[in-house]
Image (cartoon, rainbow, N blue to C red; front, side):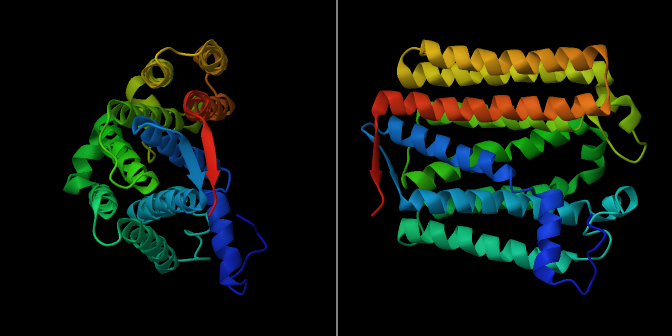
Length: 318
C-alpha cells in the first residue's frame, strides 16, 4: 500500500491503488487474449474469414469488467479473513470500503448486461449466457452454501470455482458471434479454460515453506510443497495437451511452428517447476506463477495465430 494515501486523497486515487494491489492492469492482457481467442475459435468454427471489428474492442473491455466483478465478489467473501491476514491492504486499512467496490461492481455489471442486450436486440442467447454465468458467480460468492465443507476440501473448492471458466467462454462466444453453436472447437476451448484456470489456481496457492501460515489455506499444506508442485506439473501438461488438441481440430494438423513455440513455453514452465521441486521458496513460487501464466497466455495467443493462418483476417471497423 502507498503510505502517502489518506482518506483526504481523492477516491479515484484510492480506487486505483486498490486495483494496482488486487487487480493490476497487466491482468488485462490475459482477459483480452481470452476474449480474442474465443472470438477466433467461435468464428472459425462457423466457417469463413475471421472478422475483427469495433465491437470486439468493447468485447475485450466487458470481458475485463467481468473478471473485475469476480475480484470484487472475492473481496466481499474474504473480507474478514483478509482483515486478519492482510491488514495493510488498501481495503482492509479503511482507505476504501466494500460499498465503494459494490458500486464499482454494479457499474461493471450494468455494462455487461447493457452490451449483451444490445447485441441480442433484446433478451436473447447472449444475455441468457450472461445470466447463467452470473448465477454461478453468485453461488460462488455464497460458497454454494457449504462454505465450511469447501474450506475443508480445498481441491473441490477449486473445482467448483473453476467451473465458471467454461461458462465465461460460452458467454464470450455469444458476445463475439451472437447465436454461436456449441461446436467441438468451442467445447474444447471450454475444457482448456477450465484446465488452465485450475492450473493457475493451484499454482498461486502453492506456497514456499517460509510463506505457510495457519490462518491461510494452501494446496502445499494439503499435498505437501513438493506434492503440490507435482500436481501443477501434471496440470501444466494437461493444459498444453488441450492446446495441441484444439489446434489439431481447428487446423486439421498442428502447424510445426505452433508446436515448436508451445514446446518452448512448456519447457520453460517445466524447468521452473522442477527447480521449485528441488528447492521450494517464496521466490520460486512467484516464478511458478509467472511461467504458468506465460504458458497459458502463449497458448491462447497461438490459438489465435493458428486460426488466422487458416482462415485469414478481415478488419471491419465500421
